[in-house]
Length: 372
Image 1: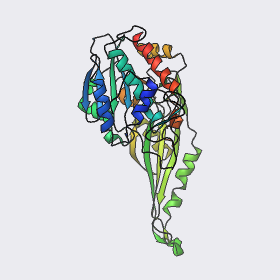
Image 2 (image 1 turned 45 degrees about the horizontal axis):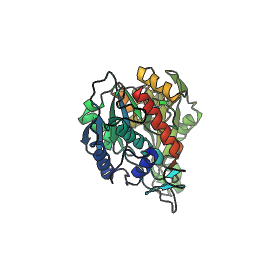
Image 3 (image 1 turned 120 degrees about the vertical axis):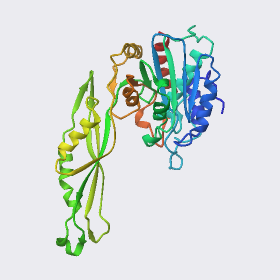
Image 4 (image 1 turned 90 degrees about the vertical axis):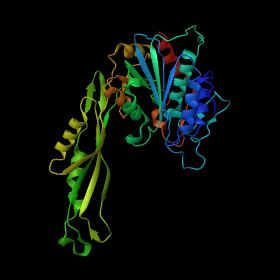
């Protein structure tokens, strides 16, 4: 498909939705994005795998990143679900609700990126007569966000071309309902394991039940009071929960092993190691192994570019409770926030959808900030 970046940004969202892009199948949408960006004389385009980076090179005093992922989760399995591909409208294109897989997460945000690139770097002034932004811009489009981190297109860029991600400030266009969400919580996964002794369940006294031995782990987690931590003016709510438990081999065997998987969502005031130490202290006496983790990101709202952006949006910033790739930028020393169209609660749902006026409002806010 050929993408027309001059189309209404909501209609452009539908064009993107109509290109299948479940994680692992992003080649077609990356091709379309790359081809559209290469027509813009004001941008230098680089491709790494199915990640595409386009940068202006005006030598301005400040550089900002607008980033978004190209992939989606798999299509709905429910018959008749509207959040699928191709997209559909309630009414005429551009009017009413837009339905489709990725409408919220995050083709609306990607459409905003592309529309801004076309308007600001296509060689023609926009309706307000502004031909060039007041800041250099790097547009980052990447693959494999919805799967394990080892496949992440953004991490591929970090490894192979970190110079392309150098900037003063970054905005990740994940859905936030058009509100700035600063930073994000970190996430930690551990497994706590108890050991027992197998025996026939008819002679249970000959063994030791590892599942029963895990009861104190669950009791400590249930009694734990998660904190709300204030970081740089925003309140981050934490959570610590058992998310999976496994053990046992058969219905007539006393289990000799039980594993409780635990997820800790922690405020960005602490490192990954500090978060792990806190969980280990709570589960003292049990065998605990870290299986996965990613640090959070501080809000980054003290940077002048961030302050200017918040002023343009005109709403009180909020914390991001979930983990997002703003943490990747934070690790690179680039303060970052989340800001994009759509209701994050609709992400990955079978009725995924976005309102066209929400996409347009996000576009206008970023346009006004970039040229101010």
